[in-house]
Amino acid sequence: MKKIVIALAMGITAISSMAATSMKFTVNGMVCSFCAQGIEKSLLKMGATKEVFVDLKKKTVAVEAKEGQVLDAKAISAEIVDAGYDVVKIETVLKSIAEIKAELKSRK
Image 1 (cartoon, rainbow, N blue to C red):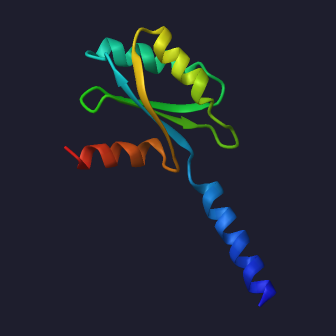
Image 2 (image 1 turned 90 degrees about the vertical axis):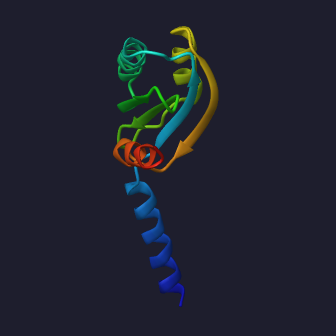
């Protein structure tokens, strides 16, 4: 029984480590593709950032971490605010950018 519990714990850990860690920011003030490009460009310069996705209609900025890296919500939020936008919500999700895009697209 003890071996089963250990195997389950290891399996759960492996699954959670395989899931991409991303952060979703709800951002007010973004109105055009130039806004999206500016945010993407500045966030991609951050060391832990693998990919960035901006959805203007949903007011969402999603940032995916590189494998083994941890995203800094305060630093990302500060970067967005410094660009002239308001961050109104931050959430950490265990999804890749591709999964977040599909989720947002299905809500249209």
